[in-house]
Image (cartoon, rainbow over all chains, first blue to last red; front, side, top):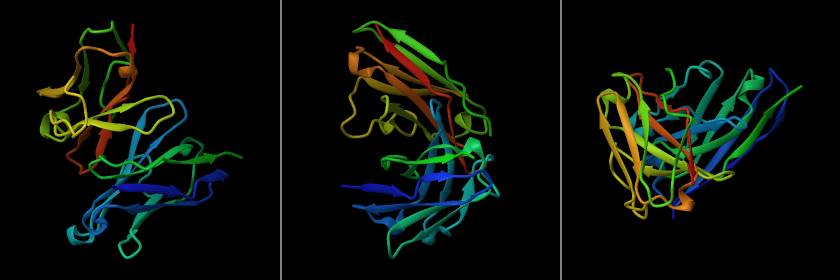
Length: 116
Length: 110
């Protein structure tokens, strides 16, 4: 069974950085495009960004609110995908979900709180 | 990329049918078959219920169906049941290579 498990959430001050990690199992990770989706408290889902598989170029793309602040990387040997978040803003607060790019598999989410 | 437009709320009685719309542009919904729908119960992880406009993943009830016309996609739930009460989100691939969600629709089953 495909499974995704996020970790790394926590409390961080505005302007700070945080790195989230997602461990994948149960599917061929190296072939998978992986995405991150977030949800602010009481708000809707927001697509954050994606990394393609290495065989498809391994490139990344992001939604406008996080471009230039967030990066995504992957380690196919460890079957993990990371979301590096820099210059964090209060509005980045929320639950961050790791998903396959087709969003058929979701992790349980990890909570990020940006507050002074 | 602006969020896709969904009604904030819809309601229907047990056994009835409802439809949730999702309006975008020719750069997203209208330009691609890659529209999907997600169901999220309070405090739970979203679940994909429709992909590629009208396809249902294995295990999803056939009471859920999807369609698209022009720049608007639709999710129809027939034979409403109490457990269908949830938030529903559409999502589309975009011409920028990104994906975009709708604002979400809260379904109340009366």
